[in-house]
Image 1 (tube, rainbow, N blue to C red):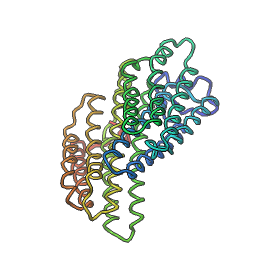
Image 2 (cartoon, one colour):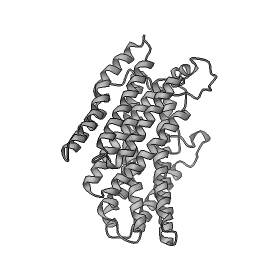
Image 3 (cartoon, rainbow, N blue to C red):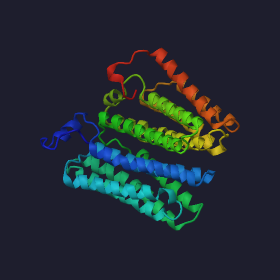
Image 4 (cartoon, one colour):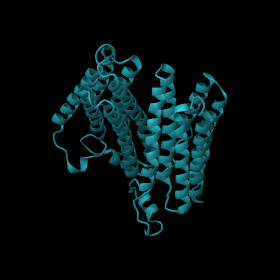
Amino acid sequence: MISRVSEDSEPGSEADARDSGSGSVGNLELFFDLVFVYAMSQLTELLRDDVSWRGFGHGVLGLLAVWWAWACYTWLTNTVTTTRVVSRCLVIAAMAAMLLAASALPTAFSTGALVFGLALLAIRVIHLVMFVVSASDDDEHLRAGLLRLAPSLIIGPVLIAVAAAFSSPYRELLWIGAAIIDFGGPLVAGVEVFRVVPSYFVERHGNIIIIVLGEAVVGLGTGASAHLQQPVVLAAAVLGVLIAASLWWTYFGLTAGAERRLKDADGPERARLARDAYSYLHLPLVAGVGFFGFGASAALEHVSDPLPLLPAIALSGGVGLFYAADVAYRWRDHHQLVPDRLLVAAASLLIIPPALTMPAWSVLTALTAVGALRLTWELVRQPRIGPAAAGQVR
């Protein structure tokens, strides 16, 4: 975790803030997250280059690898301090490796496979080095936890690097194996030894949702700029922004509480809650936004024509996935089942079949209407928005 401390803070003040459960995202993490923005745009390019079920699968596998690299970094900066020059240099080195991995993403299953795998491996090695160096000599529990988790952190990217020597479908099978090892490692090894700073974890994941939503909006703006003489395209771009806004409002909600729920959980349970609700269940939220952005861009290209099958699935299915993931997140976070979000998820999926026959702008209109109805329902039920609730996760 990185606390917001000044350069002339007293030594140990950042650690004190971490131990007390306070602290927020620092400039270094925001700097690192800029590379994640680039990675998300590269994933969109990967999908555009191969609009097929195979390309769709490649996009999912690429997202799994990139997300876990980012998630591991989040646990790292949540746990250790980066005020020292050496630590900051290592973080920047990880950022450089992430940039190389993102640059290779569009060709990660062909000519760029080895570059992507080696860059991913470098990121993991830097993470482990920082963890080991930062763990104090008397923190035997953390060191033991790192030793249990280290194999899964290394084997996954090694498999992806080795996959460069194989052709399809063996290359994809190795990527699948890497994803299973990556995501299964914390379940098998456990995360109970890691400290979690609630304010940091909630803010960091909220920021990443804003980042991917921003990437989707950038895609809409880019698509609209190529057709400035067509009012229907401009109107469709506005509808896309409204859909993105409804996703933002759905995630951040009208009441605060996520940070409090993490604070109320004890040490081991807090770590498990952070793993499940954030490292795991925020992935489908990000995936939903990413698919929506790809589908919306495809809709703007041929706004008066019906969408092909895969862009239709990406557009409506991405919105549905986001709402369904929000339901899963809420349930794991505080065991709240939200029927309105389930209904919107189902309605979004039901839009896929007619999307194959009706103009793309009408699909955007339908998704906008569904999101507006859900938001209206929520506003009617909870008309008051307190100052502390604005801009915070439920």
